[in-house]
Length: 292
Length: 227
Image 1 (tube, each protein chain N blue to C red):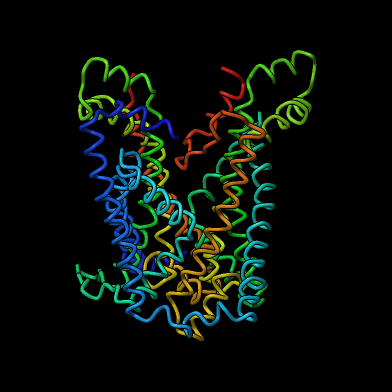
Image 2: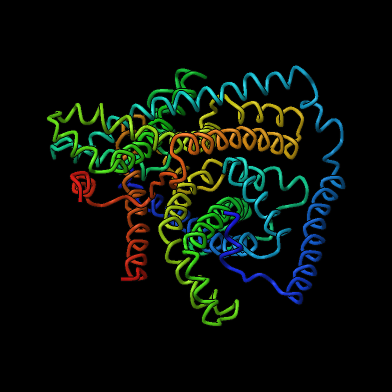
């Protein structure tokens, strides 16, 4: 990444260096001016007054934010990711099956849930299951919706991970007389898991951000606590800032873990990326699974 | 399913809001995302770092929080869109619509920036070096050699970003625009016996919209692909 400028630019000469210095000064002034203007606006509108920030400095509110907010949100996110991995393994394997009557339904399920917005699924589960069950109903509406969506994405990750194992590995395993299940469980899966881990952790970031959609069904978690706080204190701006910072910090930690796992287990190879643009042919993976 | 067919006008109106949110935020996010990407890969390190911080912060914030900011928090400090009021037949684009469009644009443009940056990074080192070796100036290197390849490499990730945007327009429904998600929610609320049918109808329309976007993306990718 740091090599990008070297790709695009020649080593600058004295004139260019002087010009860049001028641009740097101008850009720095503009950036500082923008930030200063934003802070001044907030100050002028009395957003820095103590009573607006009071809930975030009061231990009982902070505790509510961390326990009812962060912990519940993380619980929702990780329950969803765990279930999504199971969903993804089942349908990812299904998509790689040798039998068309397994492959095609798996393909249809994965493509459908990948294309349908999470909120649609969430509101359906909420009205058919959650609405009479109070907080836990809303909680599970969020978890179910996130599970099927992220499960569908992870099914693609899973398939791509299996296909990323060199074809010679499976061929060699068949050559020494292993059966299909043995090849999958002893040869392909252990190698694929390593490749998939960073992608799964990155998916946690997506899931965590999507837990905020629980707002639409009044689910517990950070957004619900935030709603109570700004409802009581009429301090929308500080609340939004604090919620955003909490989400950003958790996501950055997750991203750092993903990068570390990538370096540790995968090495210099590019991380696995799955396009949102689905393959329209359910047999596409099958052909390449057999080797080129 | 019947309730969807009986109220086909309302459904069409709801989806026209969805499509408008998608088209307006899509075009704006491409423009601002390109600008961000230019700052990000450009030679001025202050801009590059400031953009990196901004993009990281926005990308890691949930879309709901960002739209919430423009919708409910912004008006508290004088950021409002009350000047927006456009009426086209039954479609009314008001301040709520504008706030949601701006939120979607802010969120999506950071992903566009990252997609374009990955495209620029995908151009092999030798290409720019060879272009410089035959004496092209910087503008020529960019225009003739690097950018055409970078745009091609960016098409698949950009398509993913735009498809995500199409699905993200439903968040605007949760915050006050009466588009497809809000329409479906009120159908679900009023018709207890047909819930699965209503969901399937709306979901299928979304699948079709996603397939349309991915069809055009595939066509562009194929047309631009170098043999």
